[in-house]
Length: 96
Image (cartoon, rainbow, N blue to C red; front, side, top):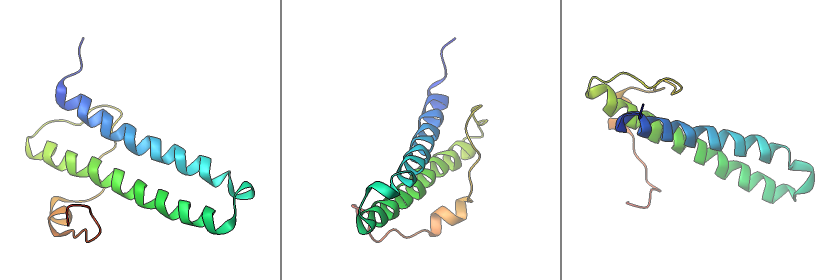
């Protein structure tokens, strides 16, 4: 059976979050092999990437909730509300 379009999108966003979690775990194991400043810089960038992946996933699911659809099995529930995303500001985003 083919997975519905919306469910494929939800799973792809969750996969993105999972991938960044894996990157963070891998990077944490590299501390002894990388210059401290570089290690810390990359760690900060990975933290930002993780937050952004979760934001995109959750925003996608808020829209999903607006459509009154159920969440796909294997996808975590949003961590924020629609009001949170409406009030969010992203001054360093490329579109600003």
